[in-house]
Image (tube, rainbow, N blue to C red; front, side, top):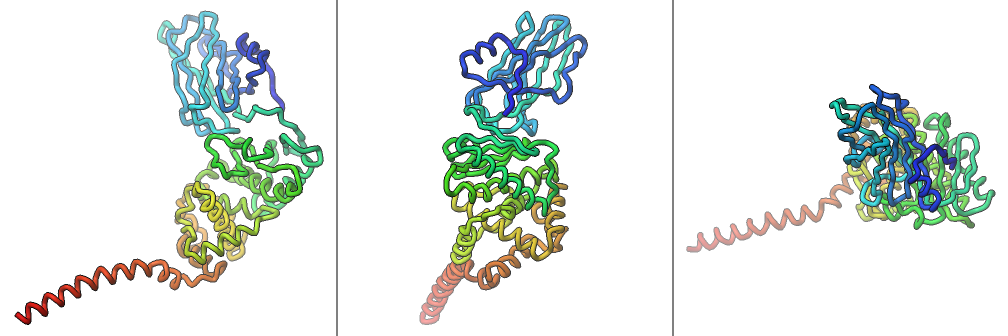
Length: 405
């Protein structure tokens, strides 16, 4: 990872000397030009991953600052923190954000902005500045080739080359669905164990994740006998999320979870046979998850989440094989335009999500939907009968007793 060094305050210089902080490259969305004589210079963010972020700046004003504040945003420009800011007489300022108490998602862009009121009442607002909140706890090994930037912690050069080969093979498969866009580099971070990738906001069972808007793919792959298989499974999966985002734009976030993960599982070079085992077992137990429940997100429990991935892969493959790749891509684009989970499939396929799910169950799993529905409702039918029969029997007994009298 290339770290860009720039002019920084004495405080930050001392921090580097003590070895506890690393600098984050920051940039304004627009050049921070002066407004009415106000200028923002030497704007920096320096952080210790998972601990704290220090925002520093030199704020030059034509008159004293009456009040100032800093506002920190996430990638969606939702406010993470907004706090008063002290601007020293020489214009320097510093604000420390506690990352342990603020939900900053790893590897995403963090934005911040300054608001000022001067002594004469004039108000000024800076442009947005940003940095990517990368994991800087480690000294990453690096290898860059053709728009792919690999970062890893354990393994030799052969390990890195194998990872890049898996990435390129994955991109070839992804190209069957979406254009492969490497106009901006994609960063692939490989952790050797789940322990190193246990960040706030990630479930404990996660072995791969993508931050598509930041062009980042993460995977857990331990060097060893299984590394090639795991690379072919996990790296293409996460790269699909990045390429899908680049094709759909911000609309990627509105596509159903089952479709995003369905596409990602379709490009895995070595899909685990446990997908089929999980499907068969759940179908036999009547424990399949309705797809309407997989629109917004997947379950957080590991076994239910794995079943959700298995269903997404099978269902997306069914749609592809039944209606073609073009319609499947049209479906993604339709969702990106803002349609709901059910209305999207109705527009593209002319069927409801429930109808398509029934067809999938019958085609992929050999289930008789009517029989399955009866099996699922049988206990309730028995209970209903009991609830009806007992009052009826009591009523008949009462009528007989009344007749005898």
